[in-house]
Image (cartoon, rainbow, N blue to C red):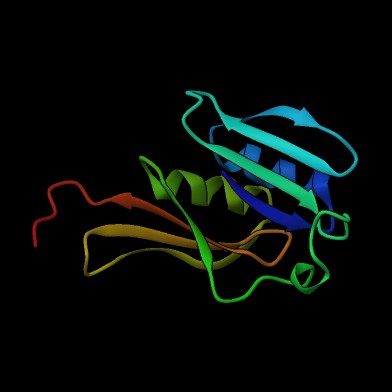
Length: 122
């Protein structure tokens, strides 16, 4: 399970549940637990200033990103566009056989949304 630190739990919850196959499993004023409908993936969203988050880790994230592999990155792009989410890069085909969309979540986390290009061979 990955936990993302957040300044706005509701906005973060909505970002991930609208774009991906997540349901809210638990929600409080300091933590939201999301689980995929097939129950194979969990994502936590925690209040950045909560006491269990060490002070040195309460800043905006840098040096990492989260990748979600989906059936169709273009479908996710359409949702992101309609919700007016922060789109860093529209879907493009990569040299390594993925169609890739980059978003910035409400907390500043870079989110890579990729789907395999059908029939791609190296």
